[in-house]
Image 1 (cartoon, rainbow, N blue to C red):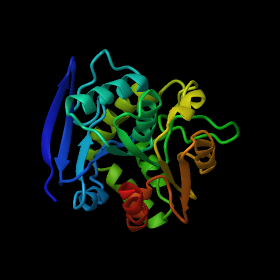
Image 2: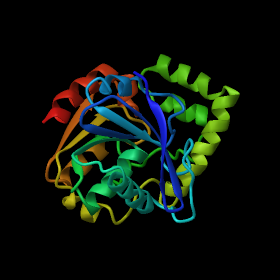
Image 3: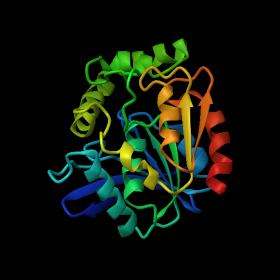
Image 4: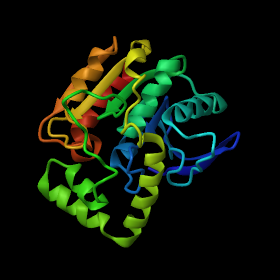
Length: 257
């Protein structure tokens, strides 16, 4: 499936995105690793939907203006993007950092959001279940930890050591830290407002996630009135990559509903 590069300028922010397919709009918001490796799941989705894949501010070809210095700014920026692009009835799929941004959008307004599909989202803290500190471990170690399958983790770790990937990993880490450094990958105020997420929510989590532990799945679901959880066996922090077919099987009926 061919995706075309576009940009949307909103005030001092320029959001770079790729767009492909036709149908109802699906927005995919990437995680803290950016889109260094393109998820094949997006090509599958573009067979049925118009898939829009923006780079979060500071990632890829999107700039990071001074007006965007925390995740709430990202939420408002993307809400403005939906309005500028005249997008309604939007299905948002978010992974990790991107899922957190999606939640921050939804607590503010679900008017343009049809549903949320959250893949191992960041955004809250569960006492007694620490996350991996992705800012204090090497990118190759983070890549290894992201998979339950040791062979896939080893291959990802090896790729992370390639110079071009190392350079991108540094840039992604800087962009991610700008949004999630302190406190680490959560907003202390988000939990109290998650009841405002009134659209249907599907939470997908790997049962051996070593970046954000699986107990977070039930914690998130308990805070949102229309949330359902699916946990995938022998799966790490990248369910849409490690268990692509299973995730696609879960997304297909949910996105159509």
